[in-house]
Image 1 (cartoon, one colour):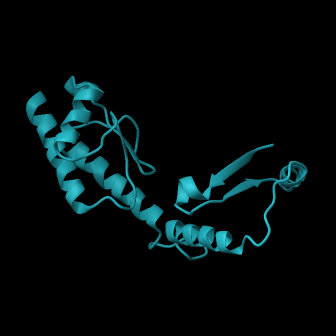
Image 2: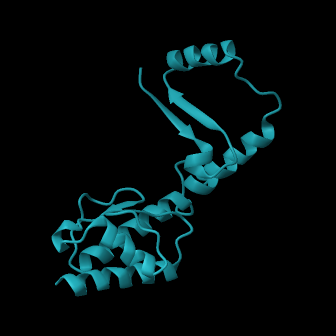
Length: 157
């Protein structure tokens, strides 16, 4: 039986909470197990409200989400960063489809550590060839990232 857990605190920014998606049979089985081991909560409305706000903010409040959803905006931002990389002459390891940009650093003979140090000099926290973007990324951070890209291409051409 296929299932998919969604952690509201880690994935969406709520104070706590999670949801399990799956077939009706799976959810009945999981509910029975949860109750048998003492899982349950009374008067969880406040936490439920926080989780609902997180879902609405991340996905938008329309039936299928809206353009105002932060998640959609972050995905667009990641595509923009991927284009910045490609316009400078870089190659991507895979197409940008989420909030992650996978850059090919090998082409420039740059190690992940060298790339991380380039970012650190510009006040950016980098982790090798994978960039993970979120809704708090500023235009200033994007400018510094673009400068890091330019520096990388300048020193390795």
